[in-house]
Every structure is written in structure tokens, then in C-alpha cells.
Image 1 (cartoon, rainbow, N blue to C red):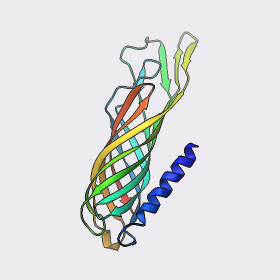
Image 2 (cartoon, rainbow, N blue to C red; image 1 turned 90 degrees about the vertical axis):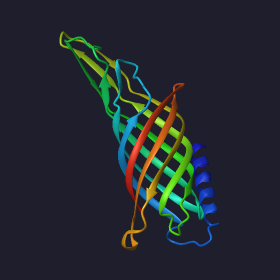
Image 3 (cartoon, rainbow, N blue to C red; image 1 turned 180 degrees about the vertical axis):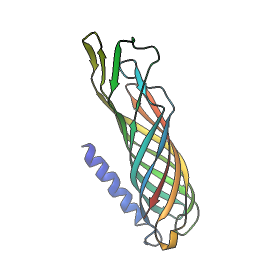
Length: 204
């Protein structure tokens, strides 16, 4: 059912794109982005470990022009978190290790754009969607023998995002460069996990 909802939403966006005054290569732009994120809210494991404050993010998406100054967007982003351990959480004879954690979001939104023919210039965006947070397994081993494992957990919840950025004109008639910053929040276990991705990318 969820997959059908996403398919219908994407179909409606593509249908709306047909209302643009002229269908051309700038009516739809596909983009690939990469960057870093800063975590803006605490989020703990079910153990004395926590998500790292700085992480890597990659994403793909599309921007669809609906009107000269209005566009729609769909973005799929994947953040790979490292982990940090709480200070003084472990005895000297204990050796903790942790698997990587990740956050994947799928967001549909609207963009307010500069009044230019090809969409270059600054833009503002607002989006809603869903996210999946996967917290890696934490394993603690004791030099005296034994240990304890905290299993990996997975949570799915609604996500929202607000952001903006700037796009260049087409370079030599080819790709567009874009730089953006966003505030993304996902509801997980009754708590909001917030990140601020800063990304750069290429649009075609």
C-alpha cells in the first residue's frame, strides 16, 4: 500500500509538470548530491552509545517545474552515521564496538524558485515524507570473559524538511551545479531526530 501511495504521488507530480508553459529540458532536472550533516538533537541507543554528531549523506532526486517560480521535488537521501560512546560508560576491562547506523528519507515537496527561464538562482523548499532509522548493533566484550550485545533496531516514521540553496545556469549547455542546506526531522519512538545536511550536487 505504501509503495502504491508513492507511485500515485509521483504520477501526480509528473502530471502537474505538464502544465508548464513550455516542456523543455529544464522542465525536469535529475540531480545527484553528496555532503555532510550535523546532528541537531540527541538520539541514544538502547545502550551507553550515541549517534555521531557529524556524518556523511548522499542522495538522488528530481526537480519538476510547475510554474515559472514554482516547482515540485522528490528526494531520496541516505545518511550514514558513525557512533560515539558515552564518557566513562565502560570499565577499563571492557571493549565496546558498534555497527554503523543510518537514516534514509523519502521526501516530496514544493520549491519557490527565482524567476528565470532555466530555474537557476536561489530557491526555497518545504517537503514531507517518511524516514527509516536503523541503529547498529552494539557489542561489549570483557577481557575477563563474557560480554553483552545490544541488537540492531529499526524505526520508521514521518519526516519533514525545510531548506534552500542555489543553482547555477547550465555549464557550457550541460549540467547544473547546486548547493543546498536543509533541516530534516524524523519522528522516531516519540522523539524527533534532527539533522542539517549541507550538500553539493550536479543536476541534468
